[in-house]
Each structure stands twice: as structure tokens, then as C-alpha cells.
Length: 120
Image (cartoon, rainbow, N blue to C red):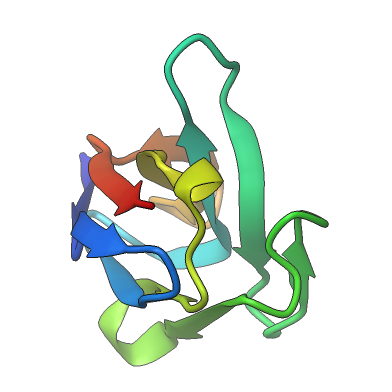
């Protein structure tokens, strides 16, 4: 069984910064892509950023230049540095990972979500 545990959410004023962390634990042979998604009330869950095992990154247009995704493979952890936050960034942020519990299998795992609230 594999779990993702997120931390780092909270309340911040517009223009401020937050750093989210997500650590994977359990039966892990390797981890391919890791990423962050968010869901605001009344909206569908959307991609924020992803990073591959080779450190190739992808960002939503709305966060390019403000957010930075990174990962520490030794710790099975992915981070999201969020700068110049805007009220429209308010959402529940979810971590996701494509995990290989064994060399023969691959699963998608989701974290429980962490609330990010940006006040104007």
C-alpha cells in the first residue's frame, strides 16, 4: 500500500508565498511522474504542475513564472513553491504520483488534499 501525505497549506495574503510538500511512503519500487492539482469550489480539479523522474516539468499557464515544482527522489517527496500568490489560487491542492509498487505494476495515488487560501 502506498500513501501520499501533504503539508504546507494555509492562509496567506495576496503576494505572499507558501511551500507545499508531499511525501510518498509504503511499498515503492520507483516513482515516475509526480504532480500537484487543485480544485476550487464549484470547479473541476485542474493540473497545476508535474515533474517526471528525469526532472522535466510542466506548468499550467495560470501559474507559470510564479510556481516552481521540484522533487527529492531520495525522499520520495515532491514540493510546490508558490510565490506571488493571488486570490484565484485559493483551492484545495492535491498531490498525485504514478508509483510502481513492483517492477511489474503501476498505480496512480492521490493525497488527501491541503487547503490554500489567499486573501485579497
